Amino acid sequence: MSESVSTEPVRPDDPGPVPDSESLGRKAGRGLTWGLLGNGITRIGSFATSLALARLLAPHDFGVYAVALAAMQFVIHINDIGLIPATIQWRGRLEDMAATASTLAASCSFLVYGVTWFLAPSFAHFSGVPEATWAIRLYTANVLIDGITAVRSAYLLRTFQQRRYVLANAAGVVANGVVAIGLSFAGAGAMALVGGQLASSATTSILVFAWARLPFRIGIDRAVARKLLAFGLPLTVSLAVQSILEQSDKVVVGRVLGAGVLGLYMLGVSISGWTPGIIGGAVRFVSLPGFARLSERDEDSLSKGVTRSLFLLFLAVIPIAVLIAVLADPLIMFLYGPKWLPAATPLRFLMILMVVRMVTGLCEDILNSTGATRLTLAVNVGWLVVCAPALWFATKGGGAEGAAFAQGAVGVLVAFPLMAYAVHRVGVPVSPLAGRLIRPLLAGTLTALVALLLSHSVAGAGSFVQLAVGGSGGMLAYVFTAVPRSERRAWVDALRRARRPLKPASGPVAGTD
Image 1 (tube, rainbow, N blue to C red):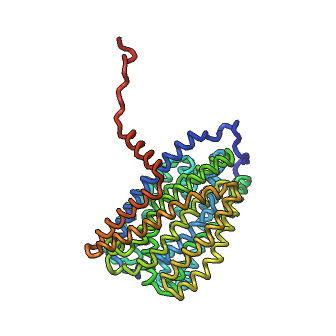
Image 2: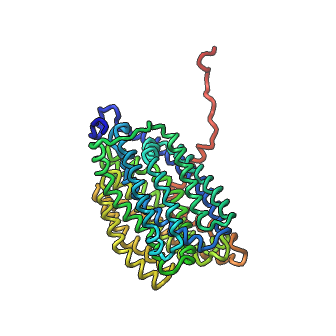
């Protein structure tokens, strides 16, 4: 056992003071910029790969992969027992806990993978896709890689080194494309998707391990372990419940409707994940460390940061959700071809769920940054208790469309109120934010009408023209109604100032006659 260390939170007179708000803002801003840029690049790479694979593989292959993905998403949430967020919000010197956290994460990941290997056949049969057994076993090997690099990934995020983290993920996307497309041409079917993901994880983890530059140490300090587990275990249970929430639809659709329909449904899930992957992923790269630092200051700082962050997130995702829902048919026809058109109807309802999960995901970061992981667990349990039966009966009665509708409805009617109450419990008032959301919602309704009318007016011109005309018109309608005129003018003035060339200094230059 390593030498005992102090686990008290850092005080302002300690060697590691809380950063001032300006310094923190600059770091978070740089992190968000790199997160958006990197996520855009990686999503473009993933998008290109998915387009190629959709042409090379059948919906049944994606259905088999969806079952493996459901298993993977569950175990990846529990394998590090919450040590990544625990490391990000650690209120002391990272060197004091790195060895303990690394040892715990790696040990748990090996244990989780061993259990998953033996349970894979049972899970595949329960999901209605027994041929997914080996896909599950291979895909979930990612947890071994994740467990080894968990603390180093957290270190990069904690110190706002999003640039390196993003570049590592971009390299992983390239590896995924090369391997997955190559295996598809070789006739590997669903295993092409699994192989690409393994190659991606391995590439990303090698770079994260190298760039974090943390000493490789193992050992357990009991005092540190107790503090880490006190934070991480409730969060792990909460993440496990959240994972069941997010993956249960794939299991239910597969069991009730089969792998073919599940593959079509999976395409809708994939498209609805574009926005969380780009905007949500970038925001959450910096939200937990940013909120954690604000929570160290005072409740007022946290409240202001939360209100602005949630409003901007909502303002950004509403038009995307509306336009994808309204233009689902021409979007899928243009990108994937007619064999994937049945995915359009569930996609419309999945966009509602996308907004719910992005907003509640940011709220979870708020709760976790203040240490209120039990509230996160309570919200997810309440959400699951209502969602599980609704999902089952809706799928039995309405197919894939029913599954998507049930999840969106439960998210709006159950998850939103529960999360609002939880955020209020940690000292963040909800009423000021609620009033600011009315305008984007009304603007979203107008956007849907404009996009629908314009796309129908050019229906005979082809799917691309429908997307271009309907999307452009809808977005313009949103900008001019959701954003107040004063803010639009401020944006224009800021752009003009940014483009204006700097004037040379007048007068004599220092050091000359």
